[in-house]
Every structure is written in C-alpha cells, then in structure tokens.
Image 1: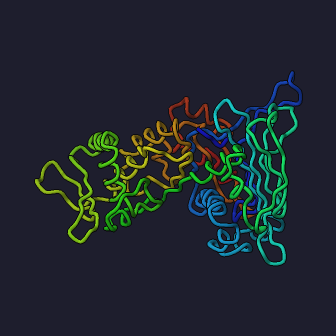
Image 2: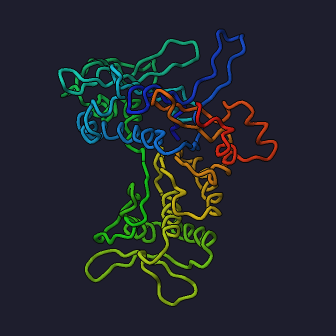
Image 3: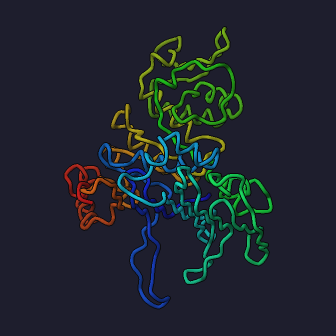
Length: 403
C-alpha cells in the first residue's frame, strides 16, 4: 500500500511552518546519523481544542479537492486565498508530501506551491520526483510552473521520455489531466493515491437519516449514507457483513442483528435488534455509541479500502472501555490502509505506543507546532515505570503546552 512518510506544510492557516517526519540523515555514508522519525501506518494527533488538528486533516481534503475540481474552487470553499494563507504571512502556500507506493520502492516527493497573481490563485510550482539513493540526484517525473512544464512517461528513468505540456488554466493541477493517461504511470499513481484519501467525521444523527433507496459502496464523511452502505455490504459482501456483526456483538453483547430495511416509500431505514426484544429498534432510538461503533467497524471492513483514512475524534460518544478495542481495530486496519486519527482523549491515548502519538499545540506566536512523543525527554522512562501516555499528557509530562 502507498504510505506517507513525511509532510511539510507552510502558510496553511495555523500551520505556518510544520514538518512531520525526518529521514535518517548522515553527512557521509560512513558517518553515524541522527535518529529517523517517520510517519507510521497508524498515527494519532493529540492536542487541545484549537491546536490545529482539524486544519491538519483539512490539508488532505484541500489537496483532494484541488485535484477533483481546481485550486480556485478549493480555496473558495475555505474563504479564499487570503483566509487560507496563514495570518500575517506572505508568500505561497506550500505542501511537500513524501511517500512510497510500495515499501521497497524509492521515496516519491510531491511538491505543490500556490500563490495569488493579480488577485487570482495560481499553481506556481508543481513537481513529482524521486531520488533513487540517499546521495543521488533527484529525477523529476513532473516539473511545472505557472501552468506549463515537462512530464515524463514510463515508470523508470531508463524508459523515460520527457515532453512539454500545458494545462488549460494555471489554477488546475497538472496531475489532474496527465494522471488520466496511461503513458504517465507515476503521475497516474499519485492521482489515484490522492483521489482515494478519505476523511471521516462521523455524526450519529446524520447516520439516522432515511436516504432514498440505493447502494453506497463507501461510507460518506459524516455517515449520512450508513443505511445504504449497510444494504450494500449485506447484499454484495455477506461474509464481510457477517464479520462486522460478529465483532459488534463482542463489543456490545446484547446486540443481535443490524439490517437496512427498505420502507414503503422507497427509503432505507437502519434497524438494530436487541436479544431481549422480538422487534428491532430503528436507529433514532439507539445510542450514539452503538451507532458509531457499528459505523467504524463497517468503515474498517470496506471491501475496497482507501489508501489513507483520516478520522476526527472517534472517541466522542463511546464508553471509555470501548476505546482500547477501537484502537486495536484501527491499528490492525493500518496494515492495509494508513490511518491518521485526531483526539483530545487521554483515555484513548493510554492505549497507544509512543511511536504512534504526535503532540500538537499552539505556541506563543499563534501557530501550531507538532512533534512525535518519542522526542520528549524521559518519555521512555515514564512508560517503563508504568505510566501510560494519556496520563503523562494530562500531567504535562509530555510537554504538550510548550512544544
């Protein structure tokens, strides 16, 4: 699976200058290097309200929307360029995403700079490159500025053919058009990767809505199509659906069955059957925690999972005793899909490993800082004494307020 290892963001709202992950660097091949810090398959971003967790996840939504539509529309949805660029900052909004398509592949780097020219958003720089070794020269599969540049065919440098290309408008990503062509497989792979990113902020009341009859092959961001997604899984992927119900029964022992019932007026109603009663309850009479646990299990058992899953504050509405199980589910799922999760719950964080936890906070200049928990002095010693990460954060031992 494709996996992001490093992210650099500049001038995006409160993320004025942040970097997640750093490679194993050495001055020479013979010299020892600093510790490597990379983004893993399962990462949780912890911090107080207003520290930038939602903004970090919105970066992925913004990039996906830039690809699906264009940069102007993605910015307009967020108030325009001046509202998105970090306050009191000048210059371009910049993103650098470093990822591997497969674990043994070279590291790919996608870089995107967006600025305003004569009052209109423009992609001033867009590049896709790799470096075959730590000391080799980068090879660019895509190199665009202001709507024109060069692109390379093939998957290897040996079969590459470089050509000059131009997009229709300077606010359109080059990977949007070129990524549709089979002759540009590296660019097409990046397009599919970004298109597959999925952001989830599940709202139980949206899941209780009665949508028109149909199938939904994936759960929506807020879960408003949960009934149709349930119907799709139960009809088209019976074994997957049965596995979801088995897991749900283990988490909520009295729950016997979940089904999507088609009503007389052509809508789909989600129903939950309790063992104690002969008739099922409709979703609006079931607790938020039950609906949410079912939705997350359904999401994590998607037959065609996304390459990246961002989930905001999954602990809301769940009993603390379910959080250990939920963390275990997400951690297991990260073997197939990279999982990013935001939280401000010490109960959830208690079940994390130090390499899975990123700490976020707003510092004195008003902007966000991010660091991996292992970069906090003494954290290993505290854990060896039996103090869990959540308790360390609450007691300020993770230095959450002075990053």
